[in-house]
Amino acid sequence: MSHSATDNTAYNPHRIFFTGFMGCGKTTWGRKLAAHLGYEFIDLDHALEEKVGMRIAEYFSSFGEDAFRKLESAMLKEADYPEKVIVSTGGGLPCFFDNMDWMNNNGKTLYVKLSPKTLADRLENSKTVRPVLQGKKGDELVEFITGKLAEREGFYLQAQHVIEGISLSVEALEAELNK
Image 1: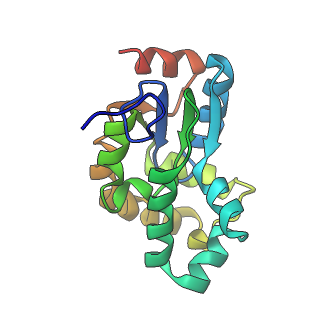
Image 2 (image 1 turned 180 degrees about the vertical axis):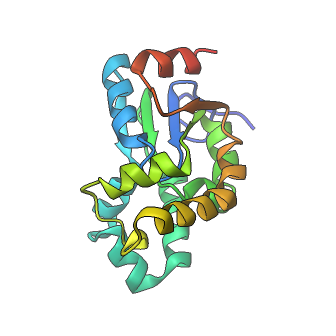
Image 3 (image 1 turned 60 degrees about the vertical axis):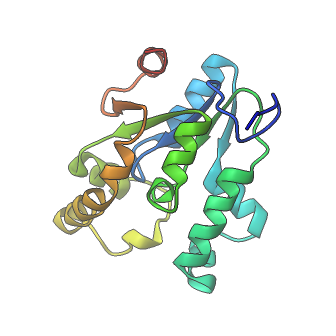
């Protein structure tokens, strides 16, 4: 099967997908790296919210997780990506359907890895409302994240690039992606 230059199903080394658990810095570092490289930036969660006209949490409660995961996968695979783009994905996206394989076949993938304790500290101090974490703090939050990471890390580790998120810099990201 041949691909044209504008076909969104062709491998493009200038299409970079950031993956990892919520709170790891996918959006923050994706934006910074995009600005540094002169790439466009897409936060897939925000694009999804714009498309459906509601917050993800609302969509989840109205239609359920299965409907959300199908919509999320369709958004990933059918988006009209710019030639040079960094895409921040939702924390669960790589773990459903063939999404991780699709990203690996259509661009570079990067897993921003952090420990459960560091993620918990960041999420407890975050201004972003995350319904799945409601009421969880301290050890309970660390335990929740540890369990979720145990389910998800097998998918995250399929990324072509894995980088420790604790002392991240634009230069470290660029160096990792150029390996």
